[in-house]
Amino acid sequence: MMRSAVLGLLVVALGATTSELDSQYVLQRYALQMAEMPVPKVVVFEYTVSQAGLGNFEQRHVLYRSGLDVRDETIAVDGTTLREKRVRFEQRPDRYAIDRIAPRVDAYQLLFLHAVRDGSHYDYVYEATPLVKQGGTWVDRVTIDGTTFLPRTVQFQTAGGTAHGSGTIAYAPAGKYWMPVAASVEAIVDGKPARERITWSDYRFPPSLPPSTFTPPHPLPLATLPPI
Image 1: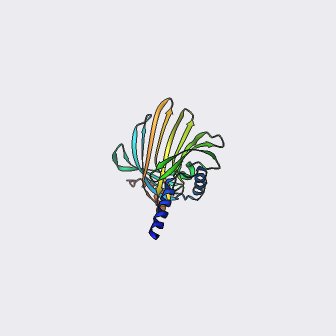
Image 2 (image 1 turned 120 degrees about the horizontal axis):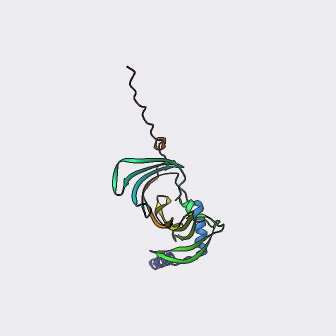
Image 3 (image 1 turned 90 degrees about the vertical axis):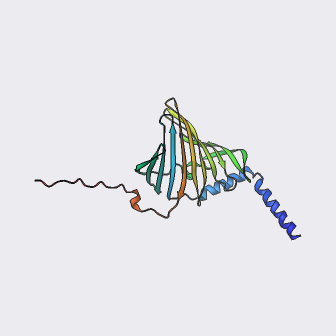
């Protein structure tokens, strides 16, 4: 009798995980998760960027970030590992961070479109419309993961000057964080098609990085011969 009761509870639990949730409930959970989701201040990762159209290339990088401080090392170009990596130092926010990209319910109207089965659960697709007209880049669709209630993919439009296009950014868990794993953009620039793809991998979250990580090396003083 006890065994039958336990099996019955398991069946109920499994059924609950495979049934669709109310779309408004998903949005409420999404808003809560976005408010609480941490964003790493210190992170190290690899990324690969490839472009086709106006310029054709592929590069592999290692990036170190602590707050706004960035050290970006190019370690391979077009499949060839560089003998001497190219290092660039910058100060800039992470433009792909989940708190900068994902549409918030206080800035967007999110209209439920449909649910998509993802293994043993459903993900939820919403059309996104900015509450205030935006230029530059704006989100037009978001897919919310039905187990974490965080954005699985974010689709966006971009326009400015002689360029316009659209793209998608995919996110996934990395440790306790929710990080970008792939992005693709197709655009028309000066009347010509252009494509870009970025993939991120090997995320690490050290407690800190030494200040020397973000300090450009000082050139050695030029040697001068004493006058004869």
